[in-house]
Length: 361
Image (cartoon, rainbow, N blue to C red):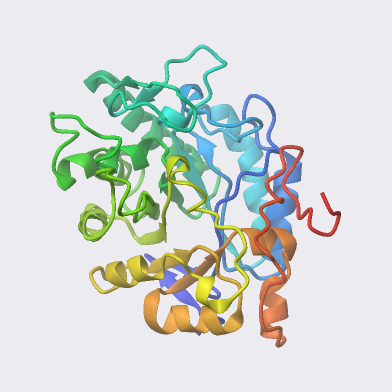
C-alpha cells in the first residue's frame, strides 16, 4: 500500500508518503520564501515524496513564532511561492502550504501583543499572553482565509491549518489553554469554532473545491498524573468529526505542546516499539471519520509503515527522516528496510535545517 496512489478530495497523490511540515529557518527576515526553501521541496519531489507540506507560514506578523520563518500575510508573497510550486509540479508530487498563527508561542521582540484564547502563562517561558477580544478572533479568521486565497493563487494544491503543538488554533481546542466562557470556549464545539469558521469561510470566500487539511493535536501530551485538564481522547475524536463535517478533507494526527516536554519530536526512536507514538489516537480517529487520516511521529521502519497503513492511518508522514534522506521513498521502494534517522533532533538547526548527525554537531 505504501506505493499505491490515494485521492484526497480530487487531489491525486502518487503514493502514501507525506513530508510533514518542518521549519527550515531559510526565509527572509520579513517572511519571503527563498530559492533555498524551493531547493528542499524540489529535492523531495524529485525523489517521489507523494505529498509535501511546507514549513509553517504565518498569516499575520503578530503570529510569527520563529526566526527566518516563512510568511503568507501579504500578496507580495504569491510570486515567490508560485516559483517554488512550479518547481515541485515539474514532478508528480503535490504540495500544500501549512498556515499558522503562533498565538501564545509567538515572538515578542517585534512589539505585537502576545495573544491567546485565555491568559494562561506559558510555564516553559514564563510569558503571559493576553486573552483575545472577539474582534481579534474575527480578524484572525480573516487572516487565515486571506492566506488560503494567496496559497491558491500561488498554485498550491491546498492548505493545511496548523492546529497542533500549542500554536494559536491548537490552544483554542485545548481546555488547558482555552478557559473562555463565551462562544469560543467551554464545550468541544465552541473550542473548535475558530477552526470550523475558518474552513467555512475558505469554502465560501476562496473556493468550495480548494483542499483544506488539518494537522491536529490529538493530545497535549501531559502525563495523566500532572493534574492538568488538557486535550486528549475522547475529545480529539469529537474534534475530528466536527472538522470533517465542516469540510476538512484530511487530518494529520500529531500531539504535544512544549510545556509537556519532548512529546512532539521524541528523541531516541531506536526500536519498532517506540515508533508511531500517536498511533492509538490515529486509530480512534480513523474508526470515526471517513476522510483520510495521516499519521506522524517517529515512523522509521518499513515494517511499521506497512502496519500503520493496515491498521492506523491512510498515509505515513515523516519529518526528520526526510531531512536525513530526501531520497528515502526511492530507497524503500528498492528494498531498504527503514530510515537511517536516529531521532537525535540535531537537524533543527537555526542556520538552516540539515542532518547534523554525520557532522558530529
